[in-house]
Amino acid sequence: MPIGKDIQYAAELLKKGEVVAIPTETVYGLAGNAFNKVTVAKIFAIKNRPAFNPLIVHIKHIEDLNIVAQNIDDRLILLMKKFSPGPLTILVEKKSIVPDIVTAGSSRVAVRIPAHPMTLSLLNLLDFPLAAPSANPFQYISPVTAQQVEEQLGDKIPYILDGGKCSVGLESTIVGIEGYDVVVYRLGGLPVEDIKNIVGNVVIKTKLDNQNVETPGQLKKHYAPKKPLFLGNSKELLHQYADKKMAWITFGKVENASENVQIFNLSEKGDIYEAASNLFEALYFIDQSDVEIIIADTFPEEGLGRAINDRLKRAAVQ
Image (cartoon, rainbow, N blue to C red):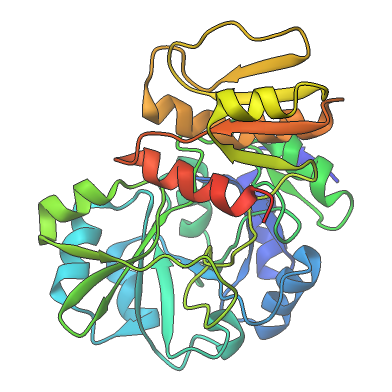
C-alpha cells in the first residue's frame, strides 16, 4: 500500500469510487465519496464496522452544509463558525442526497470541516463530500500517523495520504440539538467548556453501551488495544499486578516505578493538550511491545481530560 503526499492522485482515486486514508487534525480517516453507496459500503467492509454505527461526512466549507443538511439550528451554525475548521462535528437533519448507509438509517447526519490543510486541499478538488471514520479496524486504536494506518489496514486500500502526525490526536466532539438543549454526544478534541462559552449550558449524553447508537464513538468497547487495560487507582493496580510486565499511562509529575513497569507519561509538564495528542500513539506503541497489561491513570475530569477518560473507559477491560 503506497504512502505519499500526492493530493491529486488521492482525488483521482476517490473520483473512481476508491477508498483512501486521509490525515486530519484529529485522527487519520478512511475516506470515500459520501454520495456513493457502493464506496461507503467498502468503508464498512474494510473496517469490519457494523452497519448500525454511522459515519461522519467531511465538507470543505460551512456553505456546503446546505448540500447535505437542512433545518439547522442557529446555535450549531454559531459553533461551526467559531470552531471550524476544527475538531467539531454537528449532528443535523440530513437531506435525501445523503445515503441512509452513511447515517445507519438515521434522519440525522454528522458533519464536520477538518482542519488539516492537505485534506482541505483534497476536498477542494472534489465535487462531493467525504464519509470518513477513523482509518483502523473496528474497535481498535485510532491511528495518528500514516505508518499506523499502513500497519493496521495492510493492503486493503490503494493509497494513504501522509500528512504527518495528527495534531489533536482525539476524534472530534459531536454536538446536536434535542428539544431546546444543546447535546454533546461524543467527547473529543473540542473541550465542552469552549462550547458552553458560546451557547451556554449543554447536556452531555455520551453512552457506554451498545444500544441505540446515535453517533460514532458511543459504543461501550472502542479505541481498544489487544492487551488488557485497567483504569483507576494506579498505585493499587501497580501493586495488584506486581507480578506482570506492565505499561503505565500517566500524566504530570510521577514517582519512579519498579523495573517491570514501563512509564508512558503523556505530558510530564501536565499539559492536557499534549497528553491528548500522545494518547493513541502511546496505546499503539504499547500494544506492539512485550508488556502483558496496561495500567492507566484517570485524568482531570475537565477540558480534554474528559475526552481522554472517555477513550480510556471504552478501551478498558469491561
